Amino acid sequence: MSRSKYGGVLLKAVFLIALAAPLLGFGAAFATRVGLIEWRLGYEQLTLIWGWRLAWVSAGAALATLLLSIGDVKRRGLYALVAVLAAGATLYLHMAHRQTQAAHPPVHEAASDWDEPLGFSRVIGSQRARAGAAPLATSHAAVCDQALVARTQVAPEVGEAALEAAGFTVVGTSPFRIEGTRDSFWFGFTHDAVLRIRPGRTDMRVSGREDRPDGGEACRLAGQISERLRAAE
Image (cartoon, rainbow, N blue to C red; front, side, top):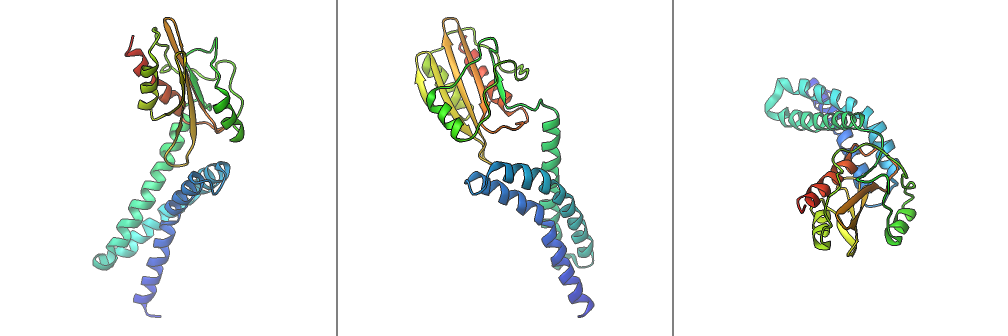
């Protein structure tokens, strides 16, 4: 085999390795999202463990692709560009995710009232049970400064709009109680939300169905809901 052909084969080999981590990430997310595999496999094992390790391998392969392309940028430059962008973005996303997880408590719930914590209706409760959700916390799961009580009895339509603005689909409403669910884009992780409307006060609770640290997602969603509710004060 000539040196030129050998270089081309080597370039394609390291290029494919550079794409391994991005493809694993997309594949694991898609398979989890559509229910082909369980989230503990797709998210915890394939993504957080093996995907993190493979991301470094792919980053090294992307660098090798770049070096192999230096002598023939016109024909090989596209390989280098795609490899560096794909592997670099994948490694960056892994590092950003790990930093986000480390910056938040390892919980998946947020509420505005832990003295009288809200529960979910039988409808959502049965869905959570079928999904194998962990039991709801009965005391302060974590401090969430964004989950603030609204000092007003909001109208049901205001509560529905607050949930919908945070990306939830309303599944149950009454003059004193509103519930909704929300699925994340990538892995299809579900958060449930419930509002309790009383004279002079409206509380909320957001709880993830998957028993995993959510990187502050429940708190962020509770903050979005709280902001809309407090605007009605």
